[in-house]
Structures are given as structure tokens and as C-alpha cells.
Image 1: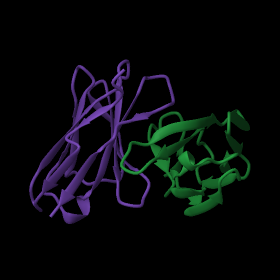
Image 2: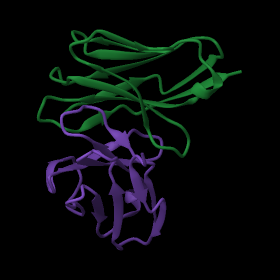
Image 3: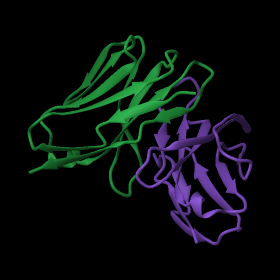
Length: 113
Length: 112
């Protein structure tokens, strides 16, 4: 089955700097890659996603890039703010008959004021 | 829009007991998935229900079972609870044909 690895496990950045989280996946047939943000005690919230036919997607300060050849995708957060502090999870969904999301282990992002 | 709602929010059970967790999907969503999230880890897929049938299952024992009702709501049942079943149980729903999943806030299960 799909195996998703996520790095780093923790990330501390100064407010205003950029944060980058990287994930790799094992199943070359995976076609959907969402990113979720989970604040302490709250539900995971979808912040951005990308499909396999797109190389990059941006939404204000958040962007995701996908390299299908290398089987990795990354989350980029620019101009970080204290409210960006949370745990971020990447996930991958396999081929069309594979309905589950396989998640990475998560990255704890701390934005220092 | 109420989003995905789960009940109860917290639960404490004793080893060997049985538990039932409940989920109401977001309005317009017909597919429900259940995930187990251990402390400090990413969610792990348990199973997915569509049209009242289990459509796909993850690597969980038969002690984990579920059900989907005609109104698309769902239950997760766990029998013979083990200490290792202590986790946050998340329900996620989506509309068939779309890719995005919406998660509920989860049920925190503690087995003592």
C-alpha cells in the first residue's frame, strides 16, 4: 500500500520567514495530495490540495508543489504568522479505486514572534 | 452548515468493553471514512462506507466494525477494547465524485 514520509517532524521559524515541509510517497499511481492543518484539540482542516496533473498550486501565502517523477510534494508557507503554528499533515490518495488517504506523521510548526 | 459532527467528544472505557462512536457527515456528503489517530501520529485509515456498505478497509482487526445508515450517518464499533485502542477517532466525509474530505473534531477514546 501507499507509504507517505514527512520531514521535518518539527520546524521552528521566525515570524515573517518561510516554512517548507516535504513529503514523499511510494505509489506512483497516487493522484491526489492534500495538506491538513491541525491545531491542538481541533479537527484536521484542509488548507490546500493538488492533483497529479498539476505541478504547482498557490492560495495566498500557501503553495504546494508536486514532482511526480521523484514522487515528492512540498508545502510552502510564506510570511509566517503566529496563527500558522500547528501540526501539518500531508496525505496521498492512490489510484481511482483506492479511496483512503495515507497520511504522513506530521510536522509541528512553531512560529516565533 | 454544521460540518461533520461526532459524538461523544470524550469517552473512557475499561479493557474488554465495547464502544460505539457516532458520526453525522456534512450536508450533501454521502461517503464516510473513519480514521484512528494515535498521539503524535498521523491518522490511520480504518474503513470507508458508501451506500451503507463497507467499501474499503485498512489494516485493522475484525474487532473494528462499522455501519452506515440511510441518512448517511455512521457508527464505529470496537469490541474487546485494548489499551492500545486509546486514540482520537476521526470521521471524515465527502461527496461522491469529489476528492476533498472534511473531518470532524473526533472522539477521544481512553481505555484503562
